[in-house]
Each structure stands twice: as structure tokens, then as C-alpha cells.
Length: 365
Image 1 (tube, rainbow, N blue to C red):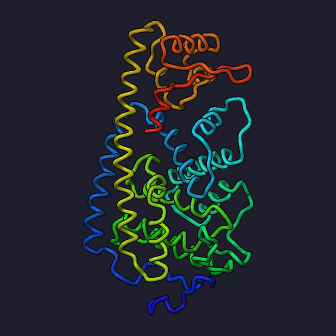
Image 2: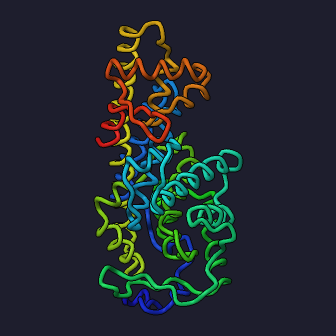
Image 3: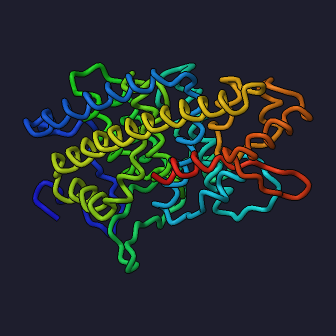
């Protein structure tokens, strides 16, 4: 506890969580310098994404990877194999963690479609996303008492605000801050929004995952990205202790600058990683198109190759749904692709599915 935060105690509900905007200078020289670098990297990401012949090739896998990583932060762990098999609706039973990760994916797409139709970040949207993540259609903001955030040693490190009215008032203030026409740099504002959402902790569960979806929706709303393809979850996993330490630094000591710098570093590093990943995917697509064109000219089409890269596990029905071929011909196409080593045939129940090993490797990079 510090002089500026006399009302804060980690084991008592933080009902005096300050409203936004913070009552101190956020755009310090180090923050502005880092913001410029992060914005430049985002602009580069937008440019490289435009080189993709079909963005849907990239999006499903990116969103699924984010769903997996964001869930890992909350100790909900599944494997790429289970996740992509389930996403491809391949026969089999899946553990609760995989099902929960797939709900996160649904929440991302729901938020993306809502923002496209109406670019507003509201309490209702946050609640709908958390409801999907938790699998509880009637979920609403916390009404019960006793919510506490503990560390791995079961020590209380933070107690969020309590009382439905107080939580809703702070969420209303957060909405106003998001949509205010101020001069604050958008990426700096995103860092503030993320902290405040996590500090309010409005739901019984799913706050971290909901807050990370809010990050990408804010970037979309601000036009900093055109597609939901930049996620900070991997960066947070790699710097998890620092993430929680800096969140507490804002709460306990009003240390905004280190927190904002951390988030800006995350944006820059994540955008850079996404750029390299997209470039690698474009190379893989071109190489695969060339190989199919040379070895199987009778079945080659650009659309066929693109279907193979939408998900690493391909089913006959994927080719049917894309209008490439009817079932019998689609089956023959995939078998031929397996014969030349581009795909690996695997049996699941009565059906075969086909693994794009190059894409599996790309996902691991």
C-alpha cells in the first residue's frame, strides 16, 4: 500500500478502483517512442496480410492457436492434435479442455462479427463473450461476494470490486473511456483498457480470456488491424510473471508506465512474429501450388490447394463444401495428394482424414 492508494488492500474488495482516465501523464517519452515502433510494426503486418490470396486460409488457424494459448494462461491445456481434429469435426471424443478452447474460438468470431456490424465495445458484448467462453448462456456480471485472486501458493494477491451496481458503474466508465474522442494514442489506450477490465474482473470466470479478446476487438475497432490475427497470449505466456507483476504495480503503486511499455512491447513482438509466420505461409502455399501443378496437373486448382491450408486436417467434405468436387472425386483428389507425399492419410472410424504435415510444422514454428 502506498500514499496514493490508501484505500487499497489486497484482501479487501477494491471498490475504490479509480475511474478512467488515469489522473497522471500516460504518454511519457519512453511510452510514445515505443508506441511509434509498435504502430509501425502493425502497419507492416497489415501490408503483409494483404499479400495473402485468401485471408481465410490464415484466419481459422490463427484464431484456433490464440484460443489454445489464451486458455493455457488459465491452465486449460489441450494439444494441437486434439484441437484441430475437433475443429475439423473428425470422429472422436474430446476432453473438456478441448471443448472449452473451441468455445473461446466461437467467442472470438462472435466478437469479430459484432464489431464489423457495430464498432462498439460494450458491457453487453463483454458479457456475451464471457457467456460463450464459460458455456453459460445466462451469465451476467458478478453478484456474489468472496471473489479473490490468488497466486500459486494460494495467497490472496488481489480482491476485485464487489457488488453488481459498483461493477456495472465501473464497466460503464470503461465503455465511456473506450469511446471518448481524446488524443490518447490507441495502443496506449488499449493497455489502459486491458488493465481496467482485468481489475474490474466483472465475471465469475473467463475474465482473462474475455479481456484478451477485447484487445483484438479494440485493435479492429481502431482500424489498426483489418483481421483478427494479432494476439498477445503467446507473449504473455513467455512473460507471465512479468505480466502479473506489472498489473499489480498499477494497482498497488499507480505504476502505469512499465505496464504500458510491457503491452507495447507485446504488440511489437507479436506483430513481428505474425509477419514472419504469414511470409512463411505464403512460401508454403506457393511451393505446394507448384508441386501439385507439376505432379498432378489434371486435378490442380488454386482453390484445391487453399482448402488444404485452411486447417491442417482435411476431410473429403471440405472439398465438397468448397465446390471443388463431389464426394467420389474429392476422395480421389485427396488420395492422389497423399500418394505424392503432400498429405498423410489417417483413418478415423469409417472415414479417412488427411494431414497437411507442412502446415502442422508451420503451426509449431
